[in-house]
Amino acid sequence: MTAHADIAMINLDSSDPAAHAAFYAKALGWETTHSEAEYAMIVKDGPAIGFGLVPGYTPPAWPDESGDKRYHLDLYVDDVAAAEKDLVAAGATRPEFQPGGERWTVLIDPIGQPFCLCPRPQG
Image 1 (tube, rainbow, N blue to C red):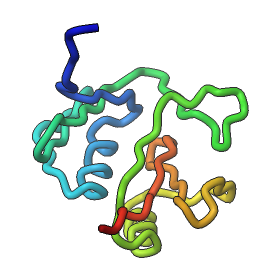
Image 2 (image 1 turned 180 degrees about the vertical axis):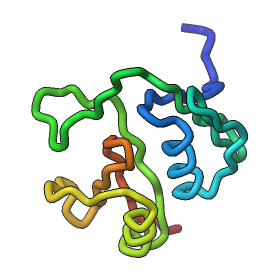
Image 3 (image 1 turned 45 degrees about the vertical axis):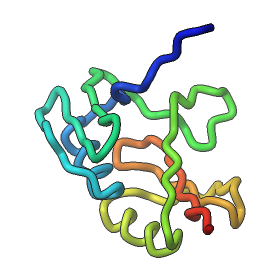
Image 4 (image 1 turned 30 degrees about the vertical axis):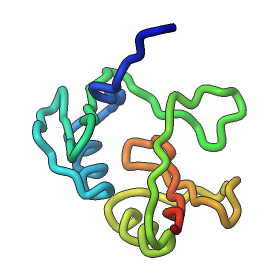
């Protein structure tokens, strides 16, 4: 393949785009640039993340042995425990099943989608 693509934007299905975007704007320190019931968007320096309403959206189970997980975000943080505390206060939950051990922590965002907190690489 001689041509390559660049990510223009990442769009995520959501049951509540405005709340979903607000949660990730807080988690990432990004700006909410659009927020309506049907669609919301956050951005910082690169590609934006959009959140689109999908009527009847159901989040995947965690853990999900059937393979129905659609996506997940891995977020680098300086202090996993502090970030977990802040994000739980913002509406995330911490499931019992934690496959990463000391390497990462799984949280569930307010609409039920898993995401991971990963220690920021040093050096």
